Picture 1 (cartoon, rainbow, N blue to C red):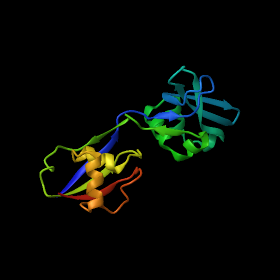
Picture 2: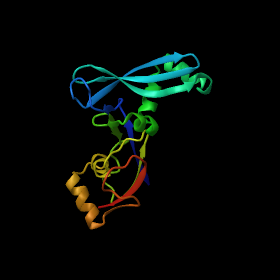
Picture 3: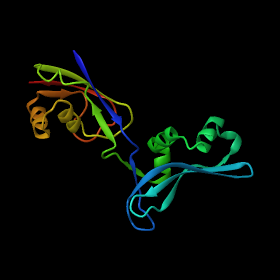
Picture 4: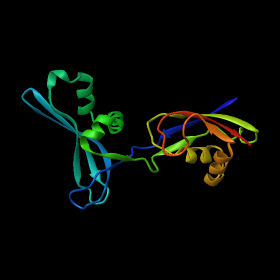
Length: 182
């Protein structure tokens, strides 16, 4: 029987970028957008606030785009300060690369195990699914999902009792499966 673990966000991640006012490196998304049109060209920014001093920074979403080339639904979502759009844009690699930012997912996600009835079996096949691309160490997910210490998970990997098709060291942000033999 295949058990499922689901990694899901609980809130928006913090934005890692240096504040020009106080040298802090963390911003939180305000959920607000600024849209500016100049004749037929449009600019749009996502506003983020420094967690230390409250200074506002702008993350570029659209830059000097022809108004006709922007989907009307996107414009409506920008004008309505859509919180779903904020989450989408923060996870968009193009927006992150353009603004030279990274995301801090600490304390912004949770693991849904669906109960602990699988813990007493000898062999457990588990599928881990991500609802958003959240980079997490597989060892941490396995330890939380199977109620084991991280050291014990590492020991099981070296003994060959915990196997997976993906490398379990480092960070993953996509789904994977593993088998645990006790």
